[in-house]
Length: 384
Image (cartoon, rainbow, N blue to C red; front, side):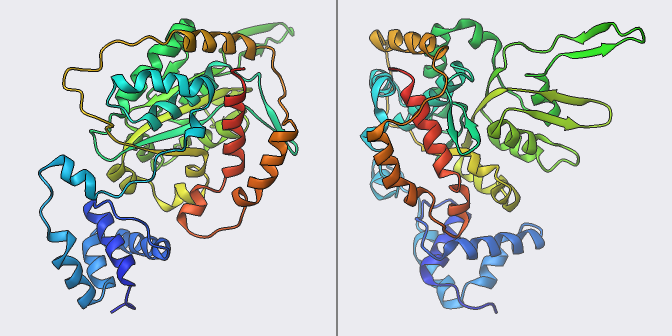
């Protein structure tokens, strides 16, 4: 029998298996990683691994409590006992972002946090690689990746995207029609969507354009089934995970396959993915946590905010839409943004917190906190 697992860790691990909304105890990360590795070795029989890991007394206590309790039939009663992160602070609803969410929120069952993050990612893609900030020798642009994680299929993830799509489509219909896509299959396919021209030179030195490439390097990828995308990473020879990481880093993409050496420079790729909590726990393995795929994403929990049996009705965005259009036009001439003295003082206060060394899975997923915060700040700063 393996050493006893602390009771709070045991409850958390078992909760992960059956989908209970358990909070993460301090010591759970290492135990969960060990259990997942052992479960894979046991052909996925995670329950058997848990039975081996937990003490007999601890397992009996667990089974006598929450795990055998019937689920609440009353959604209101269930909601009162469910543990959920505190709402995002009001500072996140600054400026036009907040105006948009407040205008839409009464008319939708979508989570305000899902509306907010999808607006920020989409608007950051819309304005292209013009605004940027410099951290040491690296330029950071407004391309962001976000995963909206629903408690279940009822998390209204797609509903939240529909509102944002409608709004920004009204600002730039050409972008909406040609630069918003879905269906990532391979790294080469992603590069192809933002590819450079392919020019061949004849024996006499004349240049022949074999492929004109793509002139608009913006691409917003919206994946309603992010789990399917992550599963493709395991396919032999599939470079999708590596190319996605290149897209977040610098926008210069390459895949040196023998038959098709694809290349793209200055690509401005943003990603929105939708996934349920249970799917995420199943498909996001140790490799994608360790190799930096996960820490390039903003992970936002989403659940139904209210019940609207008759739908949400119509709403007017009015001045907010006007502000977005002005910001989109203004962004073309922005260039490098720098902190003023007030922002610099604030950054000096939060930087030690963001960059502190931490251990465990959650720290690994949040290890790009400094860059993520500054990219978000960049998007917020453009609508002036």
